[in-house]
Image (cartoon, rainbow, N blue to C red; front, side, top):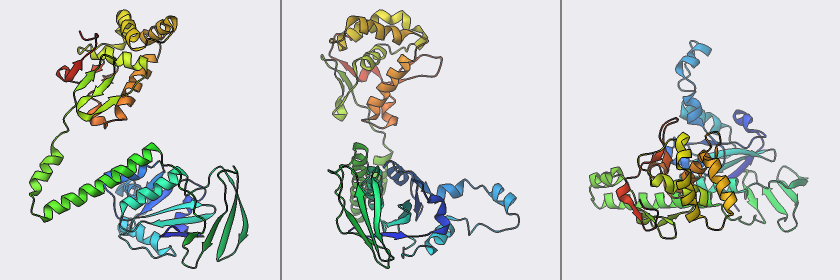
Length: 358
């Protein structure tokens, strides 16, 4: 049984959701951080506030001259209009999402918990709240009882019965087994839980009289950049974050090459450094065919080949998987088009244990 989940045959103001994968959020205005948590689930979420903001005052006055639309097209006004069409009762302070499934509108009321909303959208994005790529045959339907028989892979299939009471609540008599969450969804859930725990601790400190100014100073204080260590085995370590940056041999060779050149180098000049790149690649990739290695370096220094851009993108992705961009940009290769490219990191933070140090 999934509480606070409802279905409804028709919601006129949300008719545009029919036969789409979109989910619309209805509720109090969210912070940018909360929006990021919801969109990180992979579900295409529409926010009423964003839609309203795109309707400029000039556009409204031109199309509806003399009509006062401020109240109607305010966030509260639009939300109230949608809520008036819902059969279930939801408070204006609740976080609610609506989407369209199997010919019905599905409404989930997360009450006042953003974490519950993230959890529910995570289920949608992970496929546990939808039975996709399977053939669903409705074998019995009435006003008070809907049952689905799911056909597909025998290992994954079972009968799901949904009984719908007059209040439109869905009760899963045989709940779908939870599918393992993806890494992104686990990360999102962990961030939401950590944020909730942090908020609780901060409130506790404030209630005990801890100065708010000190807490603000913690938040405003920039995160210290970690030392970067290149080990004898050419492993790339962010020492102070206790993290290893994993890359394939060729992107790693490109990264180490630019790390050796704090002055920066233009991509169009890489042909002048072909031997150095080959030397570095030979150190980090000892199991590859020499001819293949030479071909890879030839493509890398070819100004008409996109290989160098692909490898720099791989380097950026490797760091972005560990830290946010505001920190990662100090470690990956950056630079304006047509100008020198390089790594911004202060070389005093680089520790070379291998023989590539210059």
